[in-house]
Length: 357
Ligand SMILES: C=C(O[C@@H]1C=C(C(=O)O)C=C[C@H]1O)C(=O)O
Image (cartoon, rainbow, N blue to C red; front, top):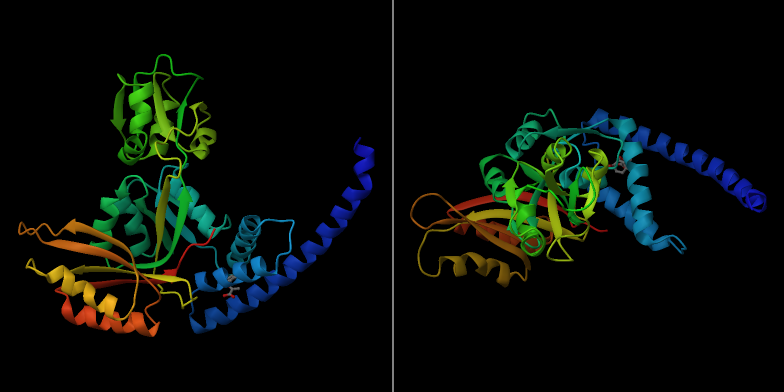
């Protein structure tokens, strides 16, 4: 009975008052830091500091709250504190309800302005023009590999990566009514169609698969026509009031997508960092082996190696390489110096904290 809960709820209410006082004390300190940053023209958002704050509270945590819950709570606290310093805009691939939006909200917390953009080019433009302080773009998926357009835009534009976030991606079949009867076409981003290929082959083998600009765009269209189904996340289901006709239809249960955060700053080292590079070498025997030698010699681990055609017609490639460590860590710095000298093309996209759940 609720009456029995009354004393416990009274204790919770009293604690909430204390938490509120403490949170506002914390917010006042963040405001003072904000004033200091404004005087010295320093960046408001400091991902390396936020990572440190979360690591410290997780270490101090004795439960029963879980570490992931602690991280989620503190991300929102810091987002609200940051908004007192400056309310920043974050660009992502829209429309509302995309996984990119989910990644952006999880990374920055909800106390920001979020700008859905029509395509990836527009996302980059919004950040490059300064209209948005940051942009969040998908870079690779654990089932389907690289997002080619993102790689090409990282090469073409003077951008820096200030952070990353990796999300578990669960796809669902969404439509206006339950069940799969009467579906004439399944709409999704080509990556999502590819990630659900086996499920679609088994359950909707004769149904058209139609590529659209984003999964949320597919959901928006499915909300207008019950012969259309979309593949998208739960967020899109609630955004467009759709039924989940089938849940978790991705072929790989562990399907994940990694996103990078485009910004104008390189965060300071945290001890758990990644550095992203784009390199190219002439098309001759042993050139790629030579290119990788400085990494081996300085004991720098490579966590990713991806290639894209250089479009020269000469079978030349750009190599997208992620290293473990920060460019200010001596072994990484030495390896980068050697790579810069040896490669025909060298672009450092920056160092940033490795995402921690
Ligand atoms: C308060 C600061 O500004 C922002 C807010 C933070 C916080 O609320 O703890 C941490 C880092 C910054 O993104 C700071 O730089 O310390």
